[in-house]
Image 1 (tube, rainbow, N blue to C red):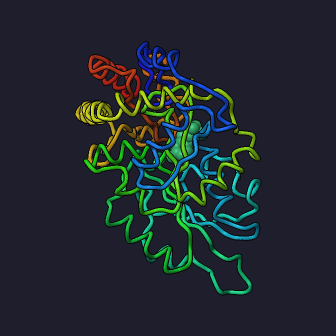
Image 2 (cartoon, protein in one colour):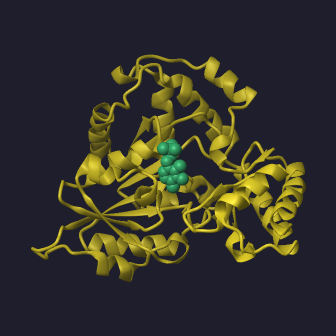
Length: 342
Ligand SMILES: *Cc1c(COP(=O)(O)O)cnc(C)c1O
């Protein structure tokens, strides 16, 4: 089976496992793990921030950021199909006691005007809007990226409305490879930034939250509070350092594979918008073929291609990653075509 369900299905390579086995480690809660510290410093610099905190997951990084930048009773603004809104189990309400105002704009982006209109600051009868969350790449929109100008504009609008800003950059490196930009071009714009290691970067687990030294000192306390403080975590951080050395430039291969997959499927007559393929996601609108998500996924699976559901009814997703070689793409095109055009 060609597994295109997600880039989370990647397995650590032999070389990554060697780097993990050879890592210098210590008790990271005592700041005695040199590999964790090296990864935190490297990611902070890469993202244009002063400091970073190594965490078990990007979900925890987002939740710590929200807790850090809000008070109970506040409101946050995020895209209606963002991971924070759809995939974190109302964590913002549970962990931080905040309400979420979802905005549903095209392609996972929000604009300055929408942010200004969403902000209630100053109105005594409404929860004060305190935080804007941006997702880049935006997963549920199909791995779409933000232009730097759009990101700058929305952050400026948030700042002038008195909002803090968080970037859920779980797949930020896909965005920066696609747009040929340094990660700090986006990273430095926001108060806090999440980076996930266990997606296209191919690590078994791990994420980082970056921000100012002062904020990351608080984030480190929240990491304990959330139960995420670890011990000899350098074993995992070593995979992160390895991935930053060896798995970043190659994201361009995943993007090229996604575009080839999309083009092949479109040429086979399937409803795929090739213009929308900016990174490693291909969205296939099986609904337009009269198929429902569940049966469409089952047909693809039976034909040898693992796809997954999306936030949009009838739309399937294929995600390329380091476990999918160029030879698999033609096979995947044929399997998906046969499954959906039967
Ligand atoms: C996967 C994902 C996360 C969560 O990452 P985990 O490490 O699985 O918790 C957060 N945000 C986005 C946009 C994601 O795609």
